[in-house]
Amino acid sequence: MEEKPIQVKTIVVRTGRIVCDIEIPNPAFRMTSPKLAAFVTNQYPDLPLHACVNDVGTAFGSVIEKTSIPHMLEHLVVDIQAHETDTPRAETFVGTSEWIDEEAGKARVEASFRDDLQALRAFNKAVEFLNTAVLTCLS
Image (cartoon, rainbow, N blue to C red):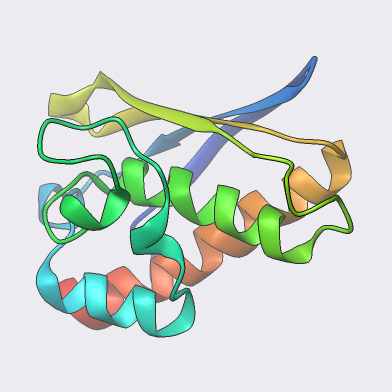
């Protein structure tokens, strides 16, 4: 069985947020590309519209073609929760992502939640989808 590009090492549920440590051993799988961005937005069309603190603009779409895979994972988890929840439309989910050890491919992704089980499902769904996307577009 082929090893997954994104490997979940730990998931911790904290008050109001879920923290996921991941590893991406292969450096070729650590950054997005235009092809990967197109593949992902085909399935998750609202992703480029997400508010996002970055050096280029105010939306995730301004960096989606050249950002870290953990950053994309963060936005996928938020998007999945927003679309699969019965919470009011005005409720906002937020996340963060950071390299813990970029050279080793270790990162931490956090996301807020209303329901911890829903957040766990969102992380699992996002990682599974992104692993397929990475293998399809970056291999």
